[in-house]
Length: 363
Image 1 (tube, one colour):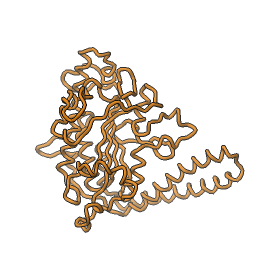
Image 2 (spheres, helix red, strand yellow):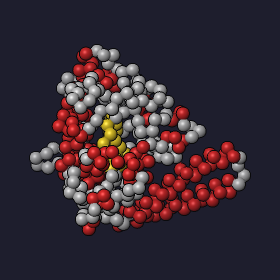
Image 3 (cartoon, rainbow, N blue to C red):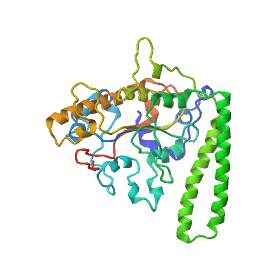
Image 4 (cartoon, rainbow, N blue to C red):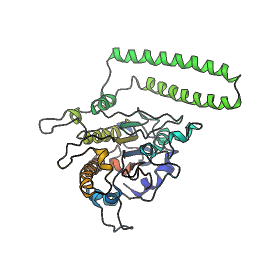
């Protein structure tokens, strides 16, 4: 990725909106035609710090075990350590705080504090796309401005359908009717809230304002869905989820991880969205990898036992290999201006969980 785009992404996001992916704008100036994009990949349990963070600083550091799959991308990434959300305690809840630095229990009186970075960016660079943001996999790291955790989808077939399959006329008619009905309900809610607002205390007025903010978010979502209902979705082959005579696609976890990454590339390339979060799930599933004999969660509580660390490394190396493959695809796939998608995309790989063995959120 060019240093200009990396350095200026957050600063420029506030004033730049992506154009629709139309061939007629292909010849527009690069600063106008190029979208600004953000992708966050978040493993729920983080990575074993001993295998992830380099021991040296500066450009000439030795790649630790878990970063070796990224060797070919070394000029394109930086490793940041000693980062911390000081207000976040340990435990599994810290996994949800990567992009907002706030735990739910600490924001009950001010839910807007939960507003996550990806949603802030979606408000700036996602308003010209069908989906302001996509939330894939699991993990729950995306939070709305009103403090609501946003649902994720880990099914490649559902994600493909959402991005690329058109509803028939009957289906669109049903959607339009549901949108109209939901809009009518919100009109009633607004009217009731307005009448109530004249009689509540100052403290209750604050709560009522927060509630109306959440209602307004739903209104905007409904209006957006209505506007996009008759806009054709981009066309693409379903081989990404179906495979072909030469490629067999496994949609079962964890083998569907590369499929999800491929869908992310397609979503960005077609300008269906400019903001994506992708969470690798936790849980104690037994990964079907040679050499892995215990569940994932059990292995994260390794206590520095070599036999458990060896098994955990097999799982974490798989995740890093898939991330490296995703970066390959982002470099190979061209944007409307003919440049690699990665040139206009910030990719963040991280977790709110610093060390799963001790449930620490530090580093």
